[in-house]
Image (cartoon, rainbow, N blue to C red):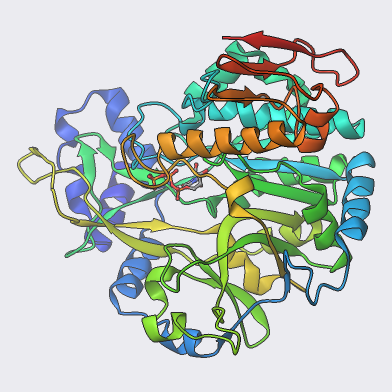
Length: 478
Ligand code: UTP
């Protein structure tokens, strides 16, 4: 774009201030700013700003909301048994039809960790990072079914380089290089909440942040990852997030339910304990499954009960999905498949005098896409209830926080392993015992490797020197 065209574009959109400090910039910095500006769809941002400040009401949607079609833990009303679902899922896994996508492009602001969240040490005994635990789960699952499961890993400009270097330095935790496909999501600028003007974070740089986990759709397409899935003849894609070390990666029962139900997009949910719990509500409105955020669900509707006293809108989203690859291809073809959400945030910015202002209150609007907004577009979408205690422990908040903190997550991990060990007949006493996915993926596998009566007197990390489950396991004690 020539300077004249650039100035004209900025003027037309009332964004001249972005070029205000250009004279002070080096040639390289000015060129970088120019590139950044050229990449902005100003008309789209203006439209989002206008739309975002009108008060959208979810009350009407919520009034028509019913419980979604579901596979319940109780088994009640389920059209297929767990055994049938497991068989279908295992068959698909063994046939190499299942891939996995892990979204790890978020900035992890609440955790307050200076690196990609995947590098956070969460193993209660081992200090293994979230990346290590999740990737080892994937590798071990592949070994169990005699296949290599490709991992599509989403980063953002904020996490990309460091993630690549970290995984490389750790030999991708056993994942073959050709089975790790890293793709980077896009960004969106933030605007001043009053004026709609974009913010500068430095004289030569616009403030921009990752465009939400929904950015996955466009990024999968643009990076050719979708084409890669097609080449590998993948049919299902297991979706998970970087912050939950307890997730059952490629859970065969979940994959199986998804397939047997003919669903294009399935979602794991927990049964909410309270009406106003801070989870997205998975509901059905006019026959379409969708999510209504807890903040958008009126209290009286959230409190509605069934005759037996249970919550009518019971299903809380835990952000674990299975996608049909063909569905992803279909929706990726339309850039409007996913709407943008707006969020008011405190964003540091340069004022007109070039001073960096760090507001303590929200001053800006950020735009993000959410992957679960694909739900209403999916045919036969269903949810599967899981036991949150066993498979859901998200690391969201900073150490010391009461909920979803590193401490609460480690405690939950140790409680689960203790349960597995007890079922295997081991004596744990007060010791902290952590089980690596390389040693055992579940209670049944653990029981096949631990002799009843085994005693753990000190804190122990049970791991395996070799990835092959046919090798004899070894324990390493710390
Ligand atoms: P969260 O919504 O918890 O956001 O992301 P976050 O960035 O990790 O943390 P906060 O809100 O700044 O404290 C849920 C999942 O979605 C991914 C995250 O990496 C995490 O796995 N995500 C989120 C992305 O991949 N890209 C995004 O733009 C946002």
